[in-house]
Length: 150
Image 1 (cartoon, rainbow, N blue to C red):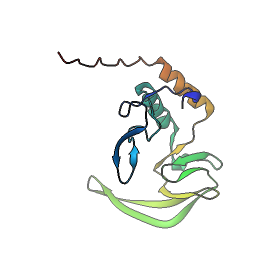
Image 2 (cartoon, rainbow, N blue to C red):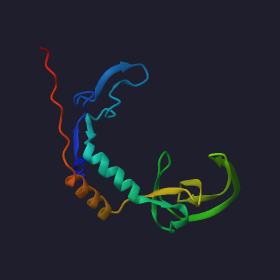
Image 3 (cartoon, helix red, strand yellow):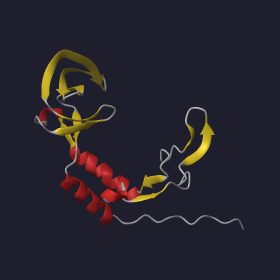
């Protein structure tokens, strides 16, 4: 994280230990940092959200060979975008819609989506550098002083 230039902080939940209260399912792993003891700063989170928004494109605008990332699926290079023959029906605010589904396929991974949906392209090094520069230009957040018992 830090080696790329993203600003990180010590996790405020576990104090950097990566451990918090114990539960049978997850042991004592801190849910705030996933056990690493480190989290992105507020400035880094804002810059990363901006970067993600810059990388979102309509599926209809994708080109073969572009690298995409799909949460829960993974990253892959687009090999084909083909109609599935399926129509999905739904409604938005009571207005009925129909979407033709397409398969965005990579070498080993694929996802079904409509052409009007957005998908995230993997950012280029230049885009990441721009986001890090944006992070560094943001005003630092101040830490609140802890209240002492009087």
